[in-house]
Length: 419
Image: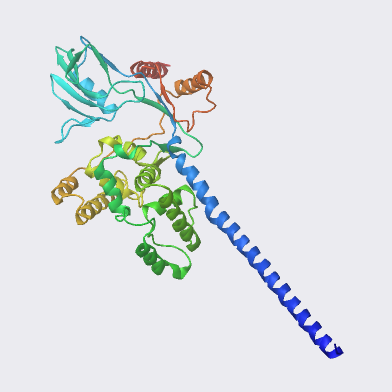
């Protein structure tokens, strides 16, 4: 073979080898880049999803422990006046029955009888049901529990103390099937009317918020669905940036893929921030209903649900006690929204608008007999092997009689004045 042909063949072989090496290098770079992108996806998406799922599953477990005093007991033949019994019910945050009749947390009183719709009690305390106390000559003449004569009965045990963790979270988780339908609908009307139709994000809501707000590089307007709000509360920080909004949307779609709409709505209603009571943060509708209205969730009506739903956007500025005008305006807005959505009848909404706003709030962080509460906590730690009652979700039924406690405190105060 001539020398020139051998050189040309050698150059072709060299060129082909260089092309193959370049192709292999590009392939290696491509595989490496794909691996890097996969790692980024795991870190940015799957890992937060695992964390989010863990926090979602642990939601019902986080609530403070509570210590109760001895329940006031009623017996046939006991000396008792109707006014005294009504005063005790008021201390337990019972209210006079309305047109709906006797429901848990309400009573109807006359000089000769007091009918009480008792609340579901703390575990192992008393039985709920309709209790009728018939009175004659300043004594208990007869007791009827669900129309059956009984020799004795008890009221709710009074709350003495609540043991919070360092975050001071007041939580009272409630299953969705125990939340009145009008209340759940009011929340959706206020926050996310299309909740059962969208896949976790509302395209129109997000685009509207982005169009309004992204010129300055941050989020100033909402557009978040219930699922996005839940994802933000469980995992993300409070910063208002475009990046956080995108992560919020991604996590919301992951939640929708993993959980049912009912599970997401229940978690949202039990996780949303509803203001403060004293130094405690009210988390979820159970805590909000008790602190703002003095009611358990099962006792809430349409007006209550609209009031609480209206507070979600800004709990402090729409408090019915501190800012009744704003609270009423928000409540009525939610009621009108429910009518527009055809979720309630106009007559029901107008009746709810006529309901008065609550005038007092319950300070949940106040402790009665604090020394007794401390001693009870120490004893519980020894007897039950509990390191801390904070966020342990325990119910402690104490033996302290509040009447005796108040009498002792009054005697000490009177004695100190004489010194």
